[in-house]
Length: 261
Image 1 (cartoon, rainbow, N blue to C red):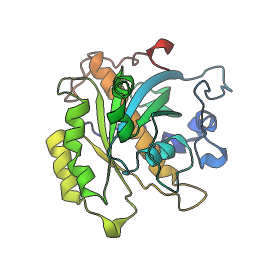
Image 2 (tube, rainbow, N blue to C red):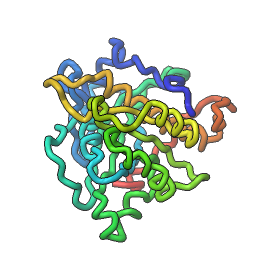
Image 3 (cartoon, one colour):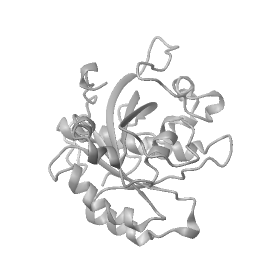
Image 4 (tube, rainbow, N blue to C red):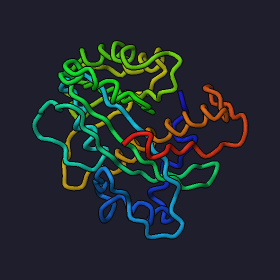
C-alpha cells in the first residue's frame, strides 16, 4: 500500500501559507467545512487559484453502518441523529486544498460522493451503473460494532471492483467512538489490510461538541486525496504500483465537466 504522507503534506493546513486556500472551504477558525451545492465552488480571492482536480467516489456498505453519516462528516454537513436509509442516489460535494510535496504545488481536490441505499441498489437496475460509471474510487464502509458488516467487505469488493481495474479502494471503519461495543479487532484490521492491500481508515460518526475534531477530518481527506493522486500517477506511467518513481511526477489529468455531474 501507499506510504501515508509520501505525496501530500499532511500538516499543510497548519501553515500560514495555506490560510487563504482553507478560508475558501472552511468556516471561520477552520472548525467546519463549508457545504457546497452541485454548481457551487469556493470563492477565489486570489488571482493565482490552485488547479482543480475532480474525483467521483462511490460509497458502499450494509444498511445502517454509517454511510450517510460518514459522507456528512466529510462534506461539512450535520451528522444525522437518527438512521434513515438513503432513498435513490444522494450526491454530496466537498473541496479540499492540498499541497503536493515534491512539486511544491497547491491543488484543490473536488470530491463528489455518491451514496445509495441498499434497498435502492437492489430495486432499481440503473442505480449501480450510474454510481460506478467513470468512478475514480470506492469507499467500503463497515461498522466496528457490527462484525457482519466487516465480514461482508470481501463480497462488496468482489461485487463492485475487479483485480485489474484502476479504481482507488479504501475501507472506512465507522462508530470508532463506541469502544465498549467493538466487535472488530485490531488484528482483524491488520489481516484485512495485509491480505487485500486496501487501507482501513477510522472515523467517529458523532459530533461531541460544536467544534468537530479538524485533525481527524484533515487526515481522512488527505489520505483519500493522496490515494487518488497516486492513482493518477500510476495511470500516467510516472510511478509503479510498488511506488517506484519512473519519471517526473505530472499533474493528474483534469476531467472535463462532462465526465460526471
